[in-house]
Image (cartoon, rainbow, N blue to C red; front, side, top):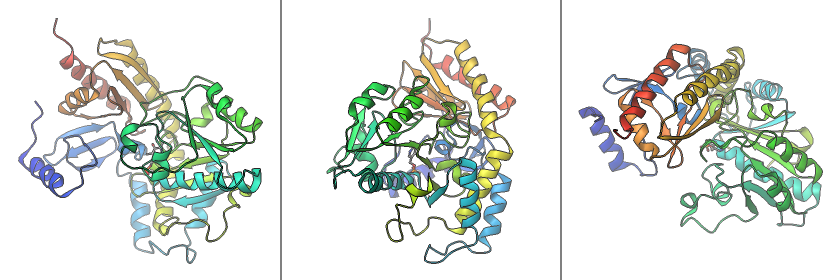
Length: 406
Ligand SMILES: *Cc1c(COP(=O)(O)O)cnc(C)c1O
C-alpha cells in the first residue's frame, strides 16, 4: 500500500474541499523538482514520466530558463499589445527561424493557439478560397485532443469532454484517425482545413501508419485545403524530431506550438504560418492581453535555446528507442501493446492503467493513464541512461506486483 504522510493528506483534503474537482490527480503532492525528478512533501523522490503533459521537455527548473525568467522579471513583465516591448521581436524572429515559417502569432495556452488556427483557417476559407459565408468546415479526427474551449470540445469525439456542454460550435467533421481515404471522402468545396495531431497524445498515444501525414498533406494540396498540425504536445523534440511532422518530411500550412515552448515556467503558445496567410488577420481581428508579453518571450527564447543547444530531439530519439526496445523485449500478459515514438510512449494494458500508475507511484515513478487502459510514459527529454535503467527496473517491479499469481 502507498502510504501518504499526514501533511500530504491534509493538503489533499484542503484542495478537495476548496477546489473544483475537474481533475483526478495522482496521490502525489510535489514540493520541488529538478531535471527528471520530483520530491513530495515528505522528501520522497519520484521520476517524472508525466512532464506536465510534455510542458517540461527541458527538465524541471532548468537553470538557463530560470535565469531568463528572473532577469526579465526584474525589468518589465507585461505591457499588453497596446504598445511594443523589446523582447517580442527577438522571440518572433527566433521562433520563425527555428520552425521555418514566415510569421508567428503569440498566445498563452495551447488551446488559444488552436482557436487562433480555427479562426485563421475560416478567414482564409472565406477570403481566399471563396467559401460561402458561415459554411466553412474543418476536418478533425476521432480521439483528437485540442483543448477544452467550446470550439475545441466541439471538434472532439470524446463523450465526456462534451457531455452537457452544448450547444456546440458547428463546422467540424470527425473522421477516423489513420485513414487517409476517410479524409478524402470528407473533403467538400466548403472544407477550409484539416486539423491533426501528428501523433495523438491524450487520445492514447496513437501513431498513424507511416506516410499518413504525407498523404494528408498531398490531399490538402490537391483540394485547396489548409493542413493545420497541432504539435502542442508532439513538438519541440518530444517525438525524436524537432517537430513530429519532420518525421514525415512535411511542412503543414499552420503549425501550433505550446506546452514546452514555455519551458515549464510560463504558459506560452504560438501559431505559425506563411506571411500572406497570417496577414489575413489585421489589427483588432484577434488578440490576447498576455500574448507576447516580455516575460513570456524571454522564457520562450530560453526554452527554445535549450531544446536546440542541448539537442533534445536527438536525446528523445535515442532514449525513446532504448525504452521501447526494452519494453518490447519483456512481454507481459498485462501488456497488449507498446507504441510511440521518441519519448512519447503509450503502453496499452489488459487492466485499468490506474492500477499500474498506483504501483509505479509506490516505487518512485510518477506516470499517468490516458484513456482507461493506456499508460503514458513521457519523461523530460533530458533523461539519462541511469535514469532510464531506474525507470525500467521500477516498471518491471510494478508490473510484476499486478501480474496474476500462478
Ligand atoms: C495539451 C494540448 C492542447 C491544449 O493545451 P492547453 O495548454 O492545455 O490549452 C492542445 N492540443 C494538444 C495536442 C495538446 O496535447
